[in-house]
Image (cartoon, rainbow, N blue to C red):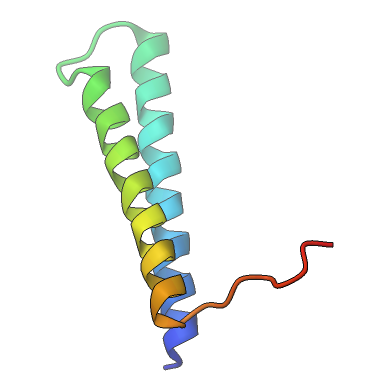
Length: 72
């Protein structure tokens, strides 16, 4: 498989996992009672968001992806 395709697939999966954790935290917030604290899901969301940013910066540094040279 192409490196760019694998990179995009990993990013999409990470973003879906981030949304899943955010939804789980919302469900716990609305429901009120849970054995697992809401901060666990919010913490996972923050950690995986940082991972996504680091992956993007690493891909930019290695040349896997290229930034848009003209923003408009």
